[in-house]
Image (cartoon, rainbow, N blue to C red; front, side, top):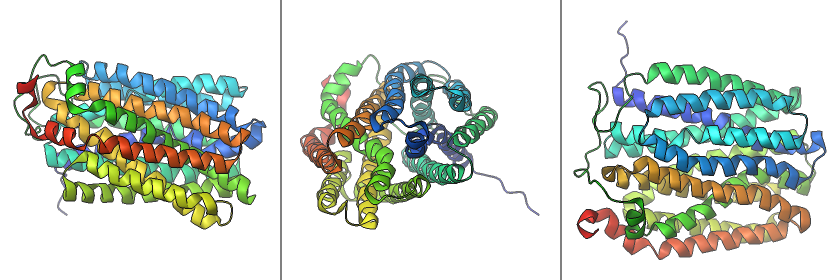
Length: 417
């Protein structure tokens, strides 16, 4: 039988997808198991939400550090270190005696998780051309959604059979296993500034590199302030809705925690669809801002419809929340993965990616604590109204930046700096 030989580009994209799958398995598991943790530890929603808030704060701050480091240090080693440390944090989680110690440990996990994305973006930008880079971004994003499906299924099963502790043990062991696979499989893809190995896929076909352009000037010319504010808002909705939807369903319709956790499976399924929708929108408009505006507008509409029906029909409620979250995943794909590539010829791709991802998790940190606190002090109706406002503001912000971004993406920007 003839031996199957993988194309180097396909192989590289596959490895990147696997490692990002593992990063989500070792990060999203707390959110998936949170409904059961609230009941098992007898803590309030805002106390439980504080654990994920700690992760998102350190993850966001670590993105900037990781981005700067990722432009100067071998990215595969940073990713390996992140996987190993995150695996250890997961294995230690069940041993934490109270919610405060869980918050501290999960905050440490957030910083280790920050070592994944900026270095991964740099590796993809340096080893892939434009078509394959976009293909890799979609594949990696689908890997994260696949991991989210897996973690909700695993969490529901573990809670049913044993308890929330088993979720962290399994995920931690998986993270350590993948760290070894990553280090071995990418030994021929590790690049240094200005140097590529012959075995790597063809580098991106960019314009000649431009030196000595500050991040501040690039942010000003590309209208990045509007983008960063919108990124905060999509982070609030993406991770806030993802974290609290099982709890909303559990409390509103009096379902068991294992069944409520299982409803979270539908979110990443819709997210996978949104990645294809985002690619279709880009083919139609050829402008990242326009595509994001459309998705924000759909999220706004779904949140408006959700308000009068969320307490009446669990199926419609889950579907509307899933579509809204999926739109945010589509926006995340466009703004966090596609946009940084435009800064590659300035040697700032990892730095810009780190800054942008940091702002995502500013939003995530606010919402994972804030939405729980709002629901605790007011009710879910008031919380849903905040979702409508957030999505509406995001729509308007990016509308202001459509023209400027089009100019930045098309022009020889260095001539104007």
